[in-house]
Image (cartoon, rainbow, N blue to C red; front, top):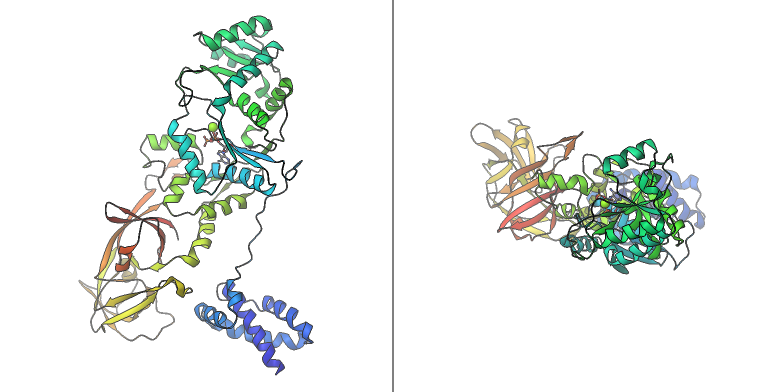
Length: 571
Ligand code: ATP
Ligand code: MG
């Protein structure tokens, strides 16, 4: 009786462990669980271990499908327990209090968002949630040369797709009057001056640590020139912070705070011609909007000194500025500055090209928002600059979609195969080997099939393969017409299983994205188009459905002009 009880308990946990780890249970892990349970009932590890080892070995002989089926029968509750996930929660913020944390995401409305923005937005949003605080979406639209109306809404759509919600939204350009007042304050205090030197001279002086003549003009006179700069059409002047022209941190050598940009602004029209730089508007907005923990990417580190100096001189609240490394992905341009020229030159098809790390590109190839979140939080908020591979995002996505995605047959580069003595069949094939709930389809087969050319090339006459989920075939002829012979249905363990369609197929093109850059060089072969035949039931798929083509990979479906097109997500 007692041995039977041990065997039963061991079997359950061996099955659970096997299902979690690709069909192979680890006897030590199983022993840990079983001993913990049975020791309480008076069994000793010494009597338990040999039985556990033998049961685990038995379980490891089973196929994963059988392991799953059995576990579902005897302990379904354990099947639901997912593999333990690493905890990707963010570290605590310094000087943070529940209910009082305010974060912000400040995109410039000059393009669609990419996965680097997703990192910033997700970190900001998650921290606000973690501290039950507030999350602000702020459009940093203070460069009318860059800001475009379409991008305000487009960026909001991108964020909504990521499931990010903001408590407040505003545009920095709505606050320009406030910025002008603060600029005036700096001028009156003698902390800022209008500089009319030309760009080359300014550069030279900065390089040599030399002050220019504009610097000594009295505040009163500066204020007059500033007012003229705002209201009239004088050209070529900028407002500069009186920093330190000999500072080792060159960012402090009288940085520009305002400059003239005579261009219609998408929201403000021609109301303003003098616009703040990021140094000024970034610091001022973080302060006056109440943000407690603004994040910036590390490349701004040298500008932090300017950020705090400005807030000091203005006498306004200083937030706790935080930094993290920019997200970089090998072979991918994670920056609007790099993405834009690719689109303009026509190297990619648009902002939603599946080779791009834009949120629209990722969406198009079937990467889910939740996978992006997982991936981004996995990277954490370290300051160490590093480039990760796209494979990490693929892995996060695969983990989510694999258990819930229907599997179909797709044959790329198809060749015809005739099975001479083929029995006519109506075969019900499950859409997923481990989840019956995903349903099945009925496929009628006769003697004509399509299979992949490369699969046939790998087989010699006389060799046996299995038409997956159907039956075994022995190759008879490979000359003009590939033909084979039906040789039964019993599973043969070492026969290759290949996917197939009948002559009732659907034509399909699948676009496969490859890396955009090899080193620094644009990869001209980065977008591959594969043509093939898919099984008939693929015809009823709808746009946005993600499926797995067996032995091919995951593909997002799009119906374009009544034609089915696939976009390859990953293996
Ligand atoms: P880009 O080169 O793509 O234009 P940017 O920093 O100029 O980058 P913004 O729209 O100004 O783009 O950025 C909004 C926010 O997103 C900023 O807080 C910025 O730090 C962050 N961000 C942008 N790119 C990345 C990235 N690759 N990794 C992490 N954060 C990023
Ligand atoms: Mg920018």
